[in-house]
Image (cartoon, rainbow, N blue to C red; front, side, top):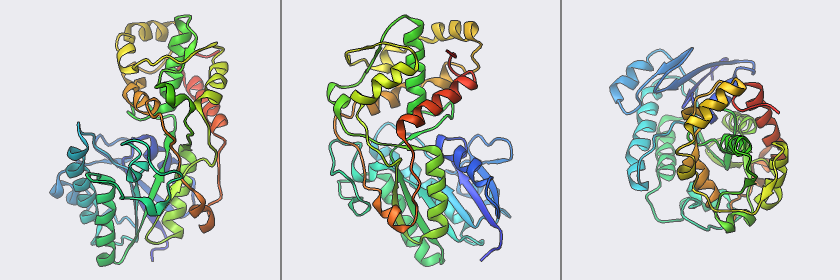
Length: 343
């Protein structure tokens, strides 16, 4: 076992990867390197769909711990499988001859069929893969199980709910969706209406704070072997209760829910955002704050969406986050960084 752990974080520019890198850099005994298609300061720019290029880029990296949070989108569930499985395979193949000790795979509730419709709740780790494929998360885990047994290293699979964070330019940032939607509503003098399906307003939900997720991911990578863990904030909520409180943060009134496809109603708002940026000194482009498709996806879930997190607690991970306070903290950070207007 190496005395210094070397972490390679794939998906370094995403909402999960960035927070994971920043958390690892606060810990003693870790060297940290990020990897993404675009690269970045102190990181590797690698096309994980290129096997030879990936192996060449990883020469001499000497990673002991791979944290895999990379993802490529495709139009259909079936089309998601080949690229996302191939990227993980190419990366592991490029590291497997080195001092690799552990691979941490970031998954989500899709392994329980949460993206398809109502599913068994609370979802437990053993419930994964019980729905009809295709599902790339399940295929990725099966690959790790096979390779770990042959390679002598261990793996963990981490399953968060919707992740709360502050990363811009990310297609899956719900806190940013709400913050920008509220800011535009306020600019237009409108109340804050819940834009999802009527049933979604009353469904039982949970979220996962990005910092909590980073802590849980590192905990699992250093304390477990060949296990999957649900990681969530530890509380449950309904939009009916939380939405008025989020509106109050922005000094907005609440009107009854009205189903509004955000990808449609926000398609013409870039000129307005440009005016708001000049007026309030905002720093982010409209493209960087637009995650409308993800907002529509989350707000369309008119069924319960939560998992059982007792397995991680029994194993020793006891951290939790108040979801309401998480939103306020993230909104404060957006204001501080002039992503959205101040009060």
